[in-house]
Length: 140
Image (cartoon, rainbow, N blue to C red; front, top):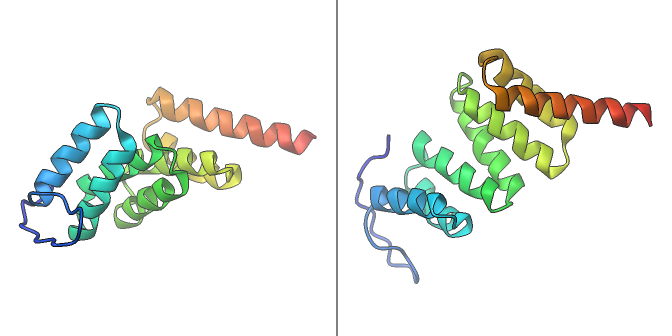
């Protein structure tokens, strides 16, 4: 979870509050449909608390929703590397790679997510789509 660590940042445009405030505001911005603004705020929070899985996941979601797919893939990959049992991070990594055009690379994390949570329809649907795209490309 996010620690309420006080971070003093005198740089121009630095947000007010501590890391927990930044996280809370970032999540609210994401929920309210402002993913680019959320990503900017959550990037600061992630720099201040690089070990926080909650911040990193919110950042990855904000990056994905603001079409920063390569950055989202890297954020999701950090979560997977730290904890390979995070099915949602595998799913997010697979989707982000798919959106960057790395369909081959997307297949493995999506397959892992499905293996962990075969009941999750979004996971199964994404994997089927990736595999169908790969089959269609091979048949060309």
